[in-house]
Length: 327
Image: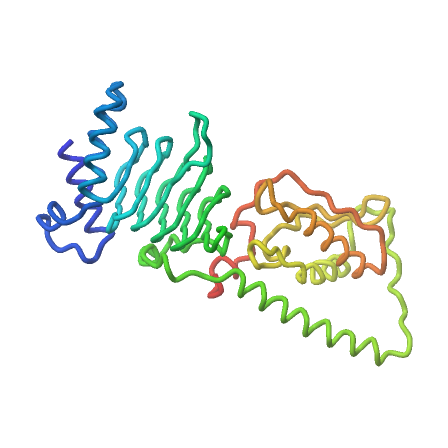
């Protein structure tokens, strides 16, 4: 027990530059007090002493401003900075090395006595005022921005911002100082608008070229008796698909690594595409946009878009997205 308490104190010094002395941490950090009282409440809850567990939990809330249900499972080295207003529900599961700021809510969305609260992975940062609802999973090394409302599963290493929460890019887990930057986050909406404005400019230039042209010779039809496309033609198609933006991320489908294969299937062009998440609400929109772009790039060839059952991650994206300044 005392070793765990020493570990909690070391965690404060690791994650809060304002901490100065051990006595200050022992006496003036409600987040640490909340974790220690929760361990007592959770012990009583596990031994079927439900009323006593809730009583200790209620005392914990009164003393620290942090409400943690005694049934919640919390890993090692959790640090709740400031603490006031934090709510952690009964079936919540929290991994190791999680950093959580004031006002965070890990809430439920069901009335049934089942798993109804989030599961938080290891080394996750949840910014001030963020709300995570329902039995969803927030993957390891994820970063949830301040004030975000998360209602969908979060992939490992992703950065989530907005209401409702959307992926804005991967977390820079290789830079320890970035963990405290839970309010300095990219804006996926602004990035999407910038992409659209750039696309509009290119379309205007293209329209001017077409208006000045006296004739137009359609490109030759693609041969359908081969499986593979000529490299030059595949490059043209991929260049055209860079104008298809995934609205949830604000990045085109080629740089995201969603386009897995472009080939011929005997009837025309076949594009095999993955999605950023299995239940993507914009799947139909993306499929239609990809189909239109490929038809335009191939001079009207029949196009079939096939969604493949492959798990997407940020490792599939082009390197400049992962390590560039834009994310």
